[in-house]
Image 1 (cartoon, rainbow, N blue to C red):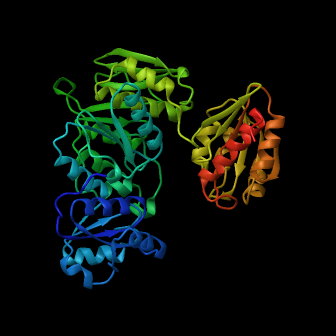
Image 2 (cartoon, rainbow, N blue to C red):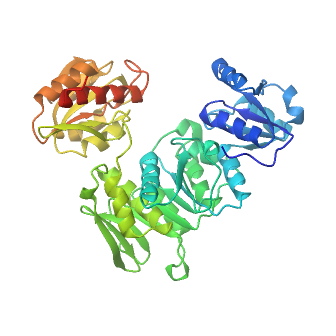
Image 3 (cartoon, helix red, strand yellow):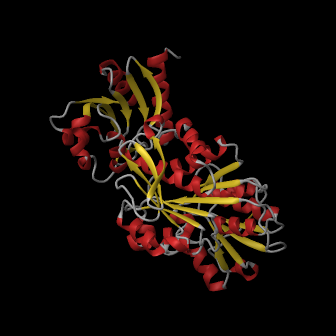
Length: 465
């Protein structure tokens, strides 16, 4: 872990005792502070007590007499839709309010190690892009640690060593309260409506993301310009190219052949453009885990970030081609007789499922579960790609009604759906689990649903038990 300095001998509040909250408590204790922990959930409090941490009700006035700071976990609201009572107590007591990301950057600022930090944010693609950057760096022989909103909590990472790079995925929840942000390279992918109740609307959501670039003042800003918020952000950060423009624009939809530095998709080729000329190109068809327009944007972002970190095109190409993808995100898990089996269990809404449907020419689509608002109506323009839909869970009847005359079957559960789809699939088609639903009607989470699909697919294609 990375010890938190600056609070030695002091009691420090920790609100929210999930993965990042407990990591913050451990890091504070390693820096000789005394964490004072609170969570609204009894089980979470019990876990903290089992590790030997003091647990006190921070929603009451009494503990605040000698607590100078409150470290807030990402899931705890501090303003919208309403501030947590413990945060109101901290504000009234004049305590400093921070989070684990702020402590992380403060801690690294006190380190003598020569390191680089790349931080990735956006609505969609953060995990894939961050993991891809880490993979490319690792394949090139550079030491790298991966964490944040993916993998290990930032304070649970190892103390930095000279020459190391930290690749961090940061959500809006993690950025908005951090009192210190100092990445060398900051990446903004895109913005679409999400978490709006927490941020008080799109303006607040964008403002949270933008803090990474304003407070952090990175030396290189990689900005996706395929949506209006990204274009606005790029314009606000841009400087004269002759004097050192810090912005690299990326796009999967437009050919960015301007005066500055850009990386974009040109048909199948990822293209780097600098000073009015092509600097490099890579055929993305050589990277099988990066199919689909959304993954093209992820690849462009990773390319731009790694170039900013000093890697050459050949090293990046090697990493792109060997990237295995992330579990449950368009994960290719099996293939037999020309039929591909793809696990996209992470697609818990129609927007995510759309990216999967558009990544293949012809699919046997397994969909359903606990429905989200709006169902799959937004996917109607893509029904032509669906050879047949295999519907499961609570949403099956509603999805059948939306599909109408499009071929479909009510399968009940995932086992029946996979077996029927595999039996009916033709060469060149993909058996695609992209549910457009939550998993909680039949599975504990989307990971459990995806793992069940993988087991079934491999049983059917390899004869595995």
